[in-house]
Image 1 (cartoon, rainbow, N blue to C red):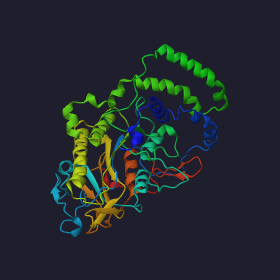
Image 2: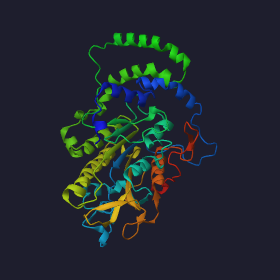
Image 3: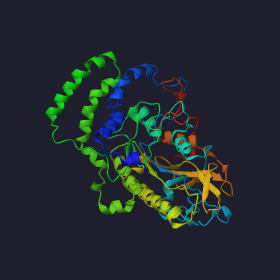
Length: 442
């Protein structure tokens, strides 16, 4: 957990995040100082290509919960076992609730919901550094200095619009500060960060001294002060400036804010998910889906295991956190009738080396790795793709990172072939050149 997110405590920062997410503006003076530049750069709006699309107009998923394994999760010790091979190391396989489908022994609870999971065992990438890999997994584009690409949650809000008119519709739980966010899209699509799910959204209680009457009077004064500026720069960011205060006021008075309060859950439910931040983040994600929030990402770090990977405080401890929380999340979503409309995704930046190094660890390995999909129209209970006998490279049905993200986009009904233009006039697609794994859908 980074200090930037854990220090998310000031009212000023909270209001700024809400402004960016809900209205596409910032309350900081520099935001309005740059409004003239924004107007010039916005002359070329994002537009679609004129080519005919063969994609379905609608997807079965209305929500996405992306479980991000920060640090590069080992594939050989989780979902891509190589029994009898030296590369397998100390991890043994266990049976799942699907005949012939085995997971690593550290995932006994996920093994019980394998029938809901389509596990991809042939993912591969060219990026072997953590920062580049994280960026690539979230955007389908390599990180370059000249532009910032949007994450999938930002694309979903841009194209599909908001589902929840009060709560933030793109939420990042326990993520790092270098998340690509909205990229070149409007700041309105930036994910709202929740550093600690136990704390929820901070600074959402209005000051006792601020009554409705005093708020309206302040708004009247602001409108008078800003009227000349708005006339000079008539654009949506500036027009939304005063509306921000009212919508922020609506948010902090909304009963829907209870969605972020995990104390609304019974203690035994919270215990089921695990009292660690990832477990509580998964519980928060389930609650947000129940409140019609579209896109939630939750991070679990600690997978960068270059030494002593088979010790109890490495692979076993990380896998146990994932196993408990993810399995309960899938089970709860299904029991509440939400899994069919919620796509649960597990991804990571790359795999870990089949060769066990001199320090009893596994190094970076972009050659092949694993992820999974559950719900959202996905037909579970199967593996897709295979790696070679030692887990070094894809052998059958290789899947690129862009293909993986295109599958998420397909589930949501996003236009994969449509081009959107950045402010500099460059064309981009939701999942770059990826092709969705349509065979996974029921």
